[in-house]
Length: 428
Ligand SMILES: NC(=O)c1ccc[n+]([C@@H]2O[C@H](COP(=O)([O-])OP(=O)(O)OC[C@H]3O[C@@H](n4cnc5c(N)ncnc54)[C@H](O)[C@@H]3O)[C@@H](O)[C@H]2O)c1
Image 1 (cartoon, rainbow, N blue to C red):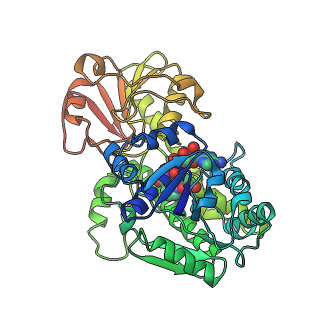
Image 2: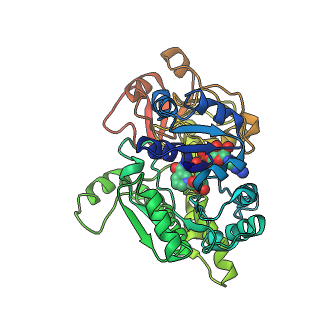
Image 3: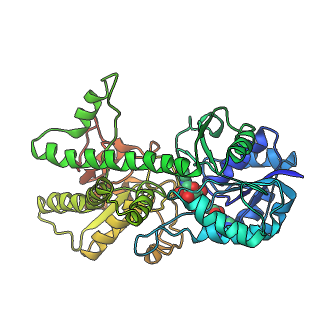
């Protein structure tokens, strides 16, 4: 008998599987993507910050293996589900990946097994939606025949100090026994467990964390524009404010919101709140401000080009940093794509440079950019652009060289702080 199956071997599922395996648990990774399954069985990583060696070590010790056959959950004591929870094209929650996973594993559920959902979602997904498909497909009763719980993931991509074992894990169960089973499981991998009273409280905790980020990022984005109009630099103000030892936490402005979580998760609550006749005005307002940021950046690019008598139409513009966040290779929901689309629609010749994204993968959202390659980093290439937008400030980019080689730099991340060169720098 294996200790657990982890379903969905992405940014959340793979690090979690490795942490369990490192602590001695036997883990079966399950995914619908055979490429990921083969990669793991051949000790190859497909996530930038995870090394081949860290996978090889666990595969070699026979603590980690992967498969596409979901009926194999019957060989495991517990199942942890980490599949995507995107929004559909009407910006409504799409929990179909969770439901499909539930349907796929239900016939193989056994009495005494624990099922935990980790995907970020609205309160009620675990004890209504997932419970429904699991009970229907298995003929078993949740809380009686099998255990059911929710435990949100708190991965901080790109942060080298963000280690699965060290991040306290919130857990809520359908019943007190379900909670105890989930605590027992996570104690094998995580140092501190934070039990809450229900699956819904655990689901709501994750949403609070992400809504908090979205609202505070919107606040500094708005203040950036207000203070900018007054000739005050928001970055200087944030640095000063964060010296306050209590009651303040720094958030930083940017060209828009990116990533798989913050632009999406708050709207899971907005949708569910409607069922209860409740409005989520903070979430809507934050969404409005954050999604208007690319327009602000483009206005700054247009003004900077205009000052040297150039229109956007026909100008060569480079986007520096396509990943949504510094030092990661994840370009999901990146505002860089919105900026590139807007510039292209205005007639600019658009290129990008990102050491973490050498080529743009095909996606549903940006099929027209698929196959586009990052330009090279050298004076000859970079100096050909009329303007460069720093959209994401990767630490391994030489901003001094950028300022020496470029004509106009529109900096949305304060990456050029304290540097000077030939370029005219516009903070945006
Ligand atoms: N990435 C983060 O930093 C982060 C942090 C906290 C929470 N989350 C949440 O965790 C969940 C997973 O996110 P992620 O970033 O790991 O996504 P991901 O896209 O990196 O990984 C998801 C994996 O699930 C697989 N998959 C898709 N449909 C499947 C199915 N029906 N059955 C089995 N596997 C399937 C995909 O092939 C992929 O390997 C989401 O709900 C997300 O909101 C993500």
